[in-house]
Image (tube, rainbow, N blue to C red; front, side):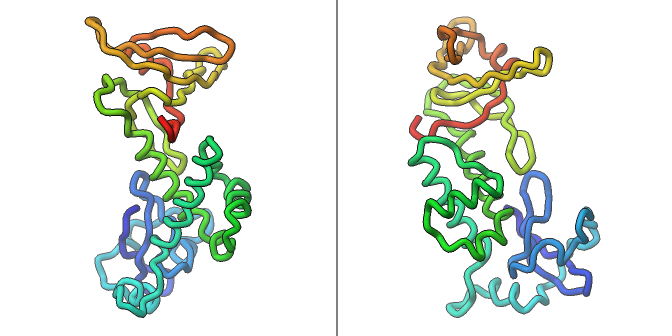
Length: 224
């Protein structure tokens, strides 16, 4: 999450919370929402990013971090995201990042949804960052094989393959997009070899370079 000061339409200066991969303005620390800065369906004008000091009273109070300061929206929404991810891990599958998935998660957690519903975009951003960090981590000593990983809120990174990863075959040419699981990544004299398990098929092996051409990384099993 990037923090940069931004100017609203009335000239006030707020602390903005941005997607660190795409530069998208998600919300303001005061919780006023991104539309305080941009009109609906409007892109952020780079001229609204400023080095000027904060003038929004709530943003200033939060930034002061004194004992009476309100919780920073960034910290509050990260805690929501951690709870949603922990629930998904207990259930054994990745969290749904759409609004309905969040609603069901908060129902399951028995957390008070307001103001959570208002801040789904920030919660989603934190969850995306946590899942990205997990996707970029494999057991120490795993031979390096890199494939593309698409972040839910935007941005593509190269992620290593490890045992327990779920991959999706690149079906652009065939229209077939099966999801597979990695069961082994081994070093051989000819380079890394990846063992793949696909539903209704016996396990098969491919080279690291083939894996990089054929697959995208979806996520990593939390217990792997």
